[in-house]
Image (cartoon, helix red, strand yellow):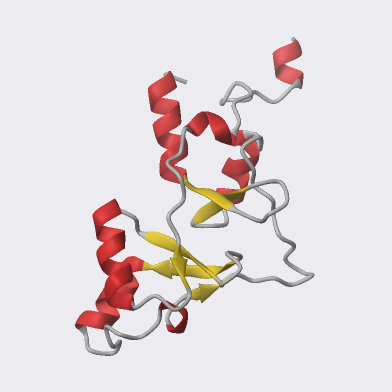
Length: 146
């Protein structure tokens, strides 16, 4: 009877840290797009966070879209990634959602329903520790047999 009252946590209380994500890879805002594409393919990443000189997240680069623009000749290989990045929205109407290593996976799943990926940061939001995606959650579930 109790299980019909409480929602079932399919992640069994697991948190972001349990995903065992690789350390974040990010780009400085002045990195060239040719280098960004090369680094992304070396690491098999589809989206890469872009940081300012203080290492604060500014936005992200969609690697496939950037490569398409480059191949079409609409992006110069020496251009900076900041020119082609998608900026993070920082408005009062869209407050920043803090995702840390101790964030429950159920919360991460909810966040990823409306976002391509999540930046996992320290509690003070000073460092990007990792990038989490829906694919990471799927892998976790399949590994655990949940």
